[in-house]
Length: 167
Image (cartoon, rainbow, N blue to C red; front, side):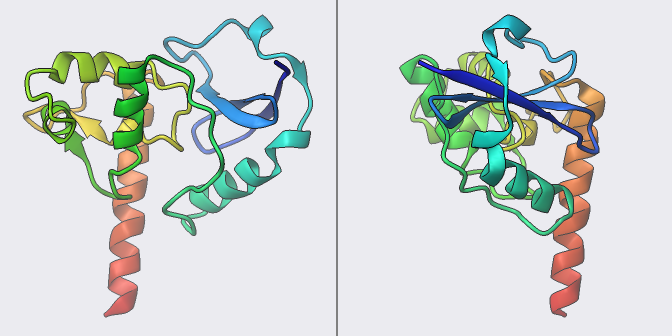
């Protein structure tokens, strides 16, 4: 199992991209909760990250609303199910932890959904920032609540601008 990583600048700070056997397996912000130790990221080499970097740049430029970069999501079966559900939340929209639990057919699992959400290894692309509290509040985000608020505002503003351009 070969791991490589690279660093890219973003409007939300430096992002660390990690690939396992050439497939994106991590996207971490600086000072992110549940960020693995640096020594697990492997050598620094930008080679396997061309598609991911291009898509992230297009996203941050407001030109991309849905990622299709291949991912290697490593976690428990339940975590992977939650992360798959996160990818179904449309750009510019949010869901509550309870709504995600309902969508998974586990209406009493909102706390477990929250724990899995917090351990998402591929932030931004797997949009855990789109999950909010039952009362609409911004609750926990591994990259920090300030970043979560900024990402949601960015997506909301970009989505409204695209709608306005149609009319």
